[in-house]
Length: 431
Ligand SMILES: C[S@@+](CC[C@H](N)C(=O)[O-])C[C@H]1O[C@@H](n2cnc3c(N)ncnc32)[C@H](O)[C@@H]1O
Image (cartoon, rainbow, N blue to C red; front, side):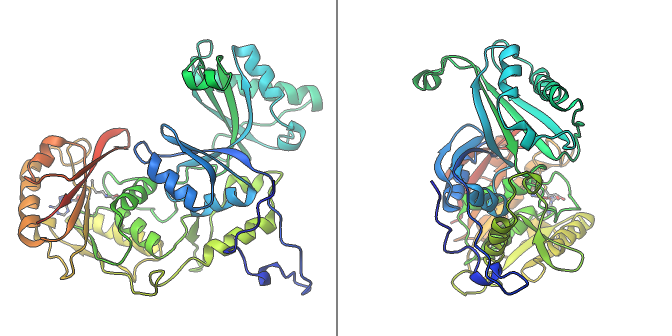
């Protein structure tokens, strides 16, 4: 079924050709299944974000969200979704008992003359396993072999594999089957899903962060943490240990409607970043332009209701890291809205209007080893209680003993994973 174009898509002028003749608006295709790969712990927040972007049949899974959308929606998700690492568009789903079934299933999975002619480079990634296919590296090789064998039979030549910048990024996911859910769907057996990765590179790389600070958060995790905090730009947001500024940049970008799929180019213009889906044979440039224009139209210099963005303030003790944060804020085009200062977070003086503090202090795993971190947390706790009454603190903790030194009681604890480390996003109401 064709979905109507959304009202906030491009204005009719954007469909005028150079001749001045009105071209037909691009048409979206039928819906297809997509898996959004998301940071662990952010599945529900990501599901809410993707639903708000008009994805359909949205279902949070483990480290992923299942959804359905059409081509226009798929473009919109790439341009506007802040939380996912990648979107995988399903090509085929088939029973996959063993390696022969995988080989045959892959060859039958798609219209390969269209998707993978020999002058198209590709790569294959694999995740999951089944009883007979327990090594994902081997399963990925089996997919590659099935495809190049098929190509040789049809054309006498094959595509090259390009791990860095392939035209087509294929993803295989294997599930063992036999669980109650798969049985209910009549899938007692192992299943394979073959998909295309629409972004190519991981979507957390927004392009503003040449400088990475020490132990930076990934941009999509930072965006998810801000989403969980509920900050909407109306009250101040401060990070007294801001590192390379990721939390503040993602927060301000969100409040000002800056779509994460855009970056500032050398000429100072904001343009859509390149995505793998633009090299696909069904890429629809008019539809893409429609979504690019719609995403661009969301960008504002104030909040959606016209009020100015409340102060966004960061402090960082290390001058070299502060300089990196400043470079990142500039590269994100947010220097007019984010105020960064050098200093010890323990000396933080909050603005008069109470707001939200976010903080990702060192917790000893990668950063701060050898430092008296317990003392740092104890001092921060004291500073917060003395100066920040009425504020809300959200702190990313990778070490419960250290957070104990704050001597504050968390009112909410959200389990998240930061670069593989089990963490908690802790909420404190400061009295
Ligand atoms: C885990 S990093 C924060 C990373 C940040 N969220 C990002 O994405 O880049 C902790 C930062 O706190 C800074 N820091 C440590 N102690 C501090 C203090 N007392 N005052 C201010 N900054 C401090 C470190 O220099 C480091 O940049």
